[in-house]
Image 1 (cartoon, helix red, strand yellow):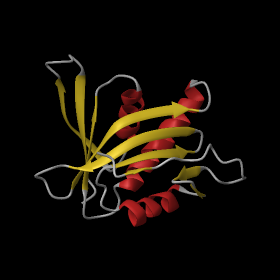
Image 2: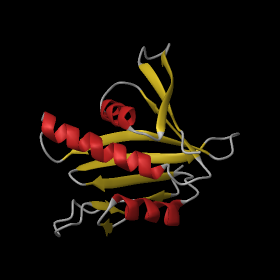
Image 3: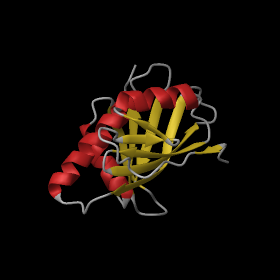
Image 4: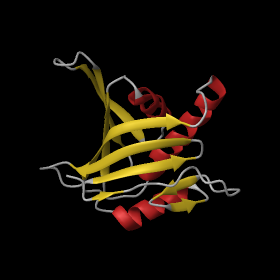
Length: 157
């Protein structure tokens, strides 16, 4: 059950504004992440639509039951404003990696993301592999879907 649905504005046209969440624009990823912690620090049952420069990601956050302080990030989706040619893809991966690293720099919570190697998960896997604050801890083939699941954990503490 989602407690609060966040919708973002289209990618801002004002010079210098590249990030947006909750109808609020930010000039840098640090300000965006600070806002997330100020407004949604419990990370419980939130859906986020976030503009990162030329791309938009959608994620949901939830606390894992029976495990204090572990936040699962799921329902991953990724869309890009341009056709994803290599030069734009590298920039987008760097931007997403930067956001994911900044998101887990704050202490007190551990974050987890599971990817499945398909659709939007591919972009998240590429970004997570470049992150300094995330570690791939397990990879396995799901018996039901035959997808290769990768479990990523933040190493922020």
